[in-house]
Image (cartoon, rainbow, N blue to C red; front, side, top):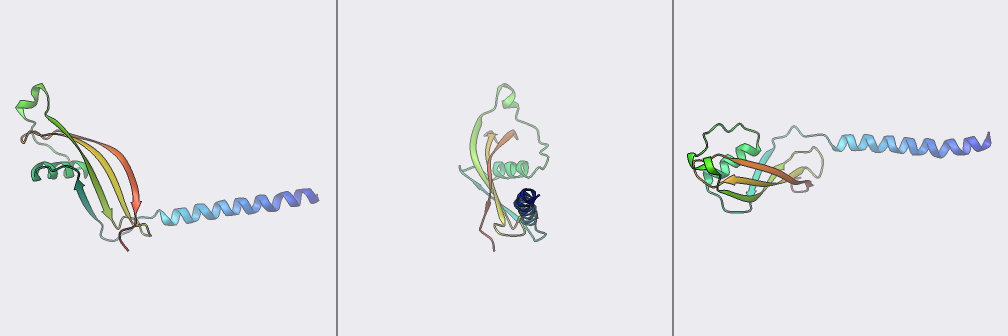
Length: 128
């Protein structure tokens, strides 16, 4: 009986501690209702229209423009790394989030082809 009490106290403490950690984790993962804004930084120099097309694509907007007739036999592809920083995303510090994409796009001005791969995402301390 004495052995059982000695065993139950530490186990109860560990279970209570784990539950407390889960509660704290749930509080820190809440999103904020403040005005958030996004910032995009391109690794390579891209013309303004193509950059806006890529930003729209990364924001999930449907791009419904015809592709170039020159691209029937293949695109003229280029690759760039794009950093998307969303400020005031989380309710508590670190509040901001940065997602890094590898974007492949057609360099022809009349073509709207683009594809992306998420390379990483991380929380940042940049807004108070």
